[in-house]
Image 1 (tube, rainbow, N blue to C red):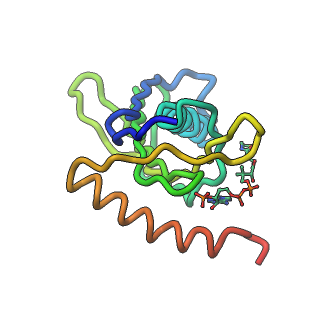
Image 2: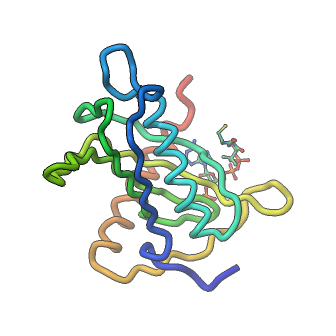
Length: 158
Ligand SMILES: CC(C)(COP(=O)(O)OP(=O)(O)OC[C@H]1O[C@@H](n2cnc3c(N)ncnc32)[C@H](O)[C@@H]1OP(=O)(O)O)[C@@H](O)C(=O)NCCC(=O)NCCS
């Protein structure tokens, strides 16, 4: 296991274009496609931090704030907010870009929990997250509070 990595070490950016097969009948992006892109972007960040396979344990509530249309360029960015024992919180933002003006609009913001998986297929200790900046520390603190609430509400059947 490494001695640790900073949030910067695993930042990931994924750029897509909304092709016809990704759109619904009214010409906006199909939500499930965006969710898949979010999960892939977060998985790359997770694996960059762990240096091995990590699996999605949960996705917090996801709200689409603005539409993404057929032909739009979509930019996803992911980063680690906090690392716990075998799990970590990853945030993914989704923006659409008008390529003529380069104006970007935030369309979704998602929080996911990934778990580091060891050679035995069980959750394994996570490399530490080295917090460098005030923003890193603020994100870490906020993620620790959310984790408490998230785990309390873990089973949607109760
Ligand atoms: C996620 C998974 C590995 C957890 O395994 P487990 O045997 O329940 O292990 P534990 O109870 O020890 O939990 C391991 C970590 O996951 C966290 N975790 C488990 N379920 C969670 C949830 N719903 N939300 C957030 N974190 C969760 C625990 O808090 C723990 O974190 P910590 O070690 O940092 O404190 C297991 O449930 C699993 O494999 N799920 C399927 C994952 C998958 O296949 N994803 C792809 C989509 S199908």
